[in-house]
Length: 176
Image (tube, rainbow, N blue to C red; front, side, top):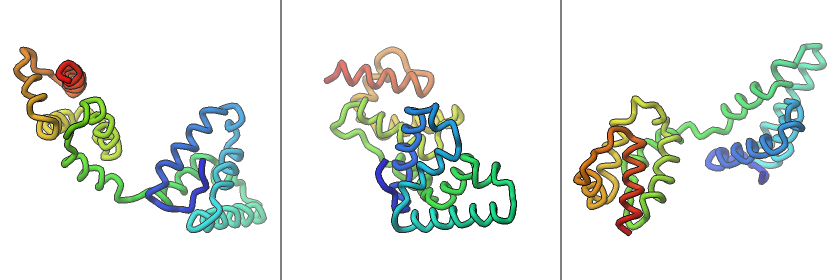
């Protein structure tokens, strides 16, 4: 990963890069302390450097007081929670909810549209089946009308979100 300064807009990319590294070398990163040290090594400036300093000083203080730090300063879940609290953009979810409402297909392929749509869908928290009707209504409103019409008048109206996605991509491919 690249060095992280604490910029909330870059936190998601930083976190994803870390997770890829952890997956890539799962045996090495099985030890929580190695994960934590690895992450802290990329926090060299700005708010992230302050976080690193706070973390290290608090860990040393806890150890000097004789506290067991296994479940706190030695624990990856504890560290990851603290990192989320400090750096996650608290408005990311709301911004994604607003963006997905106005996301238009325009000249791009259905496949390209769905790549952006799925990302916003995840960030907005619309990942449950309970959101399907709402998501389908967004597709019908925000994708190109001629493409939507081809799906509707094609003889089979899709029943759920995945069917809509599959059919829109297929029709778009045929249409182009």
